[in-house]
Picture 1 (spheres, rainbow, N blue to C red):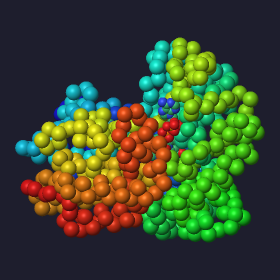
Picture 2: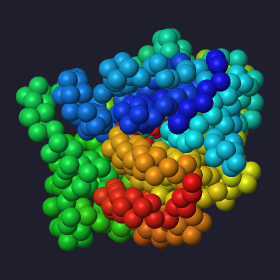
Picture 3: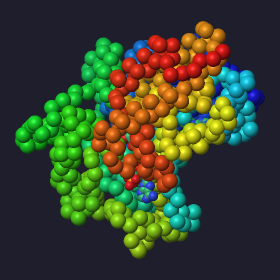
Picture 4: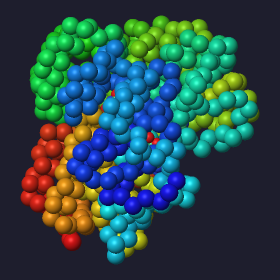
Length: 531
Ligand code: FAD
Ligand code: NAP
């Protein structure tokens, strides 16, 4: 590929990179997207494991920037499958003719700021060079997959898979003995389907997780017609909610309800299904006694569903519900009633080794033909720190973030002029419906570029003071909720050696947007602007 000089280099062609390219083009910027994968879609390009689908309803987990697009696209199910989500991303790329400015199979390995020319220089794995005034990292919060370094991992003689890098041709587990390591959302979605195919499935669970039934169903055309008759109203409602999802929260504290009332409310939410279970009462993430009432309810459901009491006991989580990301499933707990499924509890003693023949835990070797690593991601920072990003004085991002990410609004980093991160650490991102969060960042960043261009300014940098204040504010609000109390990927606990810092901004989508808008309205307060 020839070297390129453009206004904006965008890394990543997921939902963030695609919209970024489209919006910048519309403003007359020359932009180039660099994407490691061979196609668009990001998350939905890579995560092709069986059962992969969204857990925010598709009617809301979709772009809203173009009314024709949202009117013409027809989702078939309440929660779209990965193939349907990928088709949607591909449709967007084609509809807006985006592919001609995307270089696929192009992994960015370094990005260096030249402070004399005020330009970023990006190098790719193949040695190509792209230079740009502005650089936008649309690299994803959950794109850098994590395969723990189990002793003997490379000696296994069977097949191994990671949910986040699933083979495009699919995998047939028929007649095979399979191990799944992990019990997060990816495991919980894939286990019921793998169990149906496999001769035997052993699930290695380190931490039991809460999951709420999806009650997935084909979408009712009449209900869709009603939404589409006034789609902006649904979108506006979503934007007023802390998590960017239009739903009906119950503000009442759990302690003010009687035990019967609580039971009724939880039953209704369970029957409704999905993530809004946590909106059953107003204080579930603020008060541990309130939280325990919801956790007890789910544990009761697990004991009702799972017939073997010992297995049910192992499946019952003991931590705060909603502290780790809540999961949404189809038939997960019932899968453990199948005779071909075994739950291996590794909460007390970790996996000892992967042997040539299987997985060894508590002195027992579980012989398998295939291992599925459903072990998650180096979330929020991994995709960024894996690129050698060097700022104004040669400072490296991975050094600056050694004790945890520091960012102003999750958008920009002091010492790294002209670089922006879409849904970066310090923004609501993964605590929200990601599509509106992505759109808000894309629009804020591109509006900023236009503002600078209109004024002949070619350098912008977050100040250390603004960054420090935002980091302190983040830490303060995180300390007010129960979310920071457990070993989740939100705090980096899933990756050995990663500093424990609550990474996403928990102050809620509306307050965050208001703050971003105020910063822009004040001529980019907290940024140093220079010609
Ligand atoms: P991504 O989709 O992750 O795209 C980033 C792209 O950057 C990738 O294609 C990657 O290859 C590329 N990239 C990264 N580093 C480099 C590099 N160095 N060089 C070149 N290219 C690079 N969110 C929700 O709100 N609702 C859901 O239901 C939901 N379900 C999810 C299900 C799964 C299985 C996962 C993993 C995540 C889910 N998420 C969900 C979060 C999801 O990641 C976001 O919703 C959204 O798709 C992110 O889009 P993005 O463009 O920001 O990042
Ligand atoms: P995850 O939630 O981080 O789960 C990883 C699992 O692997 C956890 O059970 C973890 O155990 C286990 N694990 C990690 N290292 C291990 C080790 N060394 N030994 C044993 N077990 C180990 O990852 P994920 O399931 O891929 O999900 C990540 C996020 O992506 C989700 O939280 C969600 O935001 C998104 N996602 C959404 C959906 C959806 O429903 N739409 C589906 C998939 C993913 P511990 O809990 O003990 O660390």
